[in-house]
Length: 115
Image (cartoon, rainbow, N blue to C red; front, side):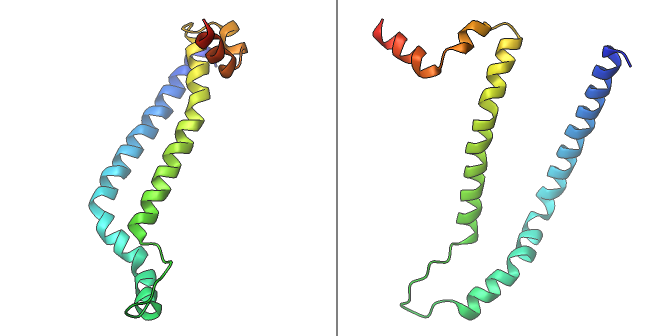
C-alpha cells in the first residue's frame, strides 16, 4: 500500500472514531441522570445505613466532589501528556528548530533572564 493509501486509511479511521465519540457523547447526555442514579444507588444506600448519626463527623467523600477531583486529575495528566507531543509537532512543522530543543528549558529560561 502506498503512502497515500495509508493516509487515506488513517483519515477514514479517524473520521469513524470522531463520529463514534460524538454519537456516544450525545447518547450519554440523555441517559446521564439515570445512569448516575443506577451506579450510585448501592453507595447511597450503604451511606444511609452506615452513615453518621447526628453530630458525628465522617470522612466519606461526596460523589460529585470525587468526580470533580478525578476529572481535574485527568485534565492535568492529559495536559502533561500533550506537552511533549505539541513540542514534537512544532518541530515537525518547522516552527521550532531541532537545535533549540536540545537545550533544557531551565537553561533557556536562565539564559533569557540574565540577558
